[in-house]
Length: 46
Image (cartoon, rainbow, N blue to C red; front, side):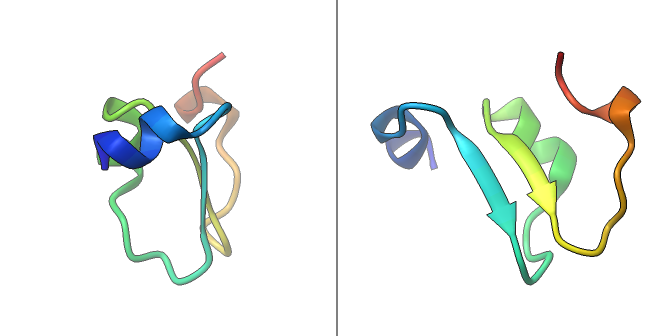
């Protein structure tokens, strides 16, 4: 996943199938958006 993140200008992951752990993806440096999971502004990086 690090190779993918490093190849992106802005590492945004839109997870349409909710396959990934949101917190784990954020720890790897992605801005994570899970479709249908709702939006919690406190859980997202500023």
